[in-house]
Image (cartoon, rainbow, N blue to C red; front, side, top):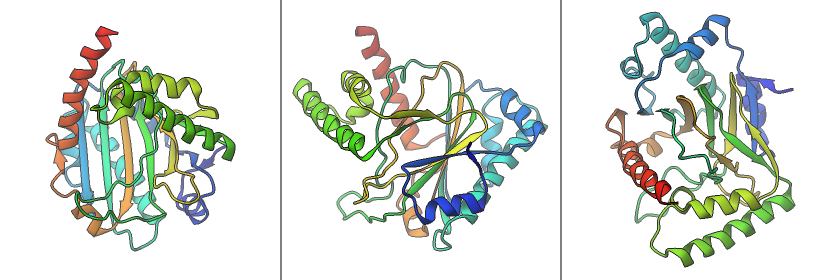
Length: 279
């Protein structure tokens, strides 16, 4: 049985994160569940907010997703802000800011083959030594659609994962030495990794959230995860608590609609569709 999402349970996990990830049940009210289930998604759009600004522009973003009622938009807005508050109250006070992202996507075959990976460090500057901290983690939940997959491994299975990953990267480079972001763009690499790795595959379900370790450190417990197959519309929320300095590294990639990462994603998606049709 999973623990309920609250400040106490999050703090307990973060104090001694021996697990690669942990899944929590979110005790939504029935009216909130109804809102999440019925929220209309008609547009693929991406929201990013770096700061401590109480998400002032979030409601504007929510109005762009589909023809939803004012009541449902207000309730969705409140739900996301409440979740953010719980997460931020659970972390060390030095983390005064957050990187919050919402990805709203339409059905696609892009993740029919899972993309197993660890996230690593989110905050870095090109050409400089990246700051490393061992307590870097991400909170994720699905507001609508299928949940994220996680791979629960024993130490031996983790060693095997690392070995297979290195071997398949080598194979991928032999096929195409110029390809970037292999776990996203090399479908043969993704398929081989998915077939060969061992461990228990856990999917976060409806009305659940997960917290996973992002940084790769000496404990080697970063949360291996993958997007699920997306055969229905999906609304995904992630929160990474951070310092003001860390948010400033990303300050130019902010606000509704024009996010640089999202524009890169759309460009890649077109290439993926073309590549998939050739296989």
